[in-house]
Amino acid sequence: MDTFAISYDYGKTFVPKYFHQASYSIAGCMAGEIYVSYYNLYRGTGYGNNFTIQHPNFSTDSLVLEEVGTLPGEVYCNKSPYGGVPYGLAYSNDYGQHFTVSFINFPGISHFAECDLQRGTQPGELYFVIWESIDTVALFHSFNYGQSLTFQSYMFQTYDELLYTTGKTPGSFYYARREICDTHSCLWIYFSRDYGVTFTTYFHDLDSVYTGVPQKDNLPELQIFPNPATEYITFRIGCKLPDFDAKIVLYDVVGNPVFYAILPKGQLQANLDIRNLETGIYFYSITCADNTGLLSNLTTATMAKSHGKIIINR
Image 1 (cartoon, helix red, strand yellow):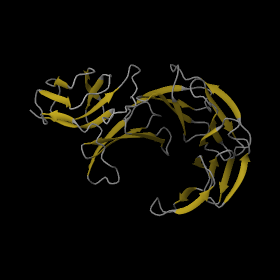
Image 2 (cartoon, helix red, strand yellow):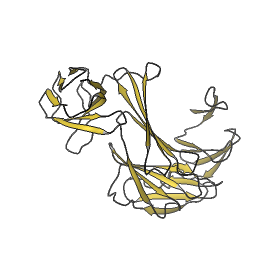
Image 3 (tube, rainbow, N blue to C red):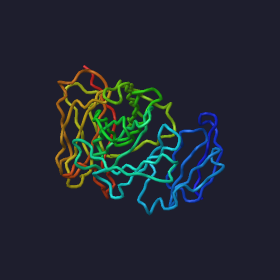
């Protein structure tokens, strides 16, 4: 039995519910409503106490539950069983009993790995989060059920976590990214009032007050010195990486990349000239990539990425 639970006090306590083989679930737009799918699509009312089958051939019709609309009865699904372009958007206004499908091409996007759907605050308003690759995420917006689209912006990506959601007021959109900085978490929250075109950034160095997130020792043999640094800083890897280049990127505290360097394959050390950077705190990421630009699935003890913090002090 798969388990989900309901909270009535903002997540402090939960009442467990049970459902047999639930692959996807999403809250409805009315109080106590929930949709659950596996082979069939179920609609629950009464906060999970009652369920009815809405669509008995859900999986065989290659439908994947994505989102509900702002109006009662609206349900959105993905009908792109093999991924990529075009994106199949399935829409229902009768609580998932029947769907109409439209196929969408995103301007400027020739292929993508994944598309996540978020509803807006108005009927027919949708946000499409397009993962072109593991490190390239584009945001599109529609006011008319996906019939026409506008590109809004590219979102900063992190290899640890990237979360996103619409707000409760028109035009509001949030996304957050988290990275491990030394022994604790660093959190960036990006907030938009103009449908995801421009964002205000809030940075939080969570230090030891943020619990429940284990430290990730991604490159246990990595040495960075001197730190704090003044003019030069050295990145030294104590064991040989596989036959891929390693990319070193420095970011400022709001997440803007300000410095790039390449550690060529087979080389264990990179000496970086940082004299053009201002005094302050910077964050680094090191990724080991193949010629596609994607993180490699390494089989050695050394992982493909590392994050942390350096200080420039003059």
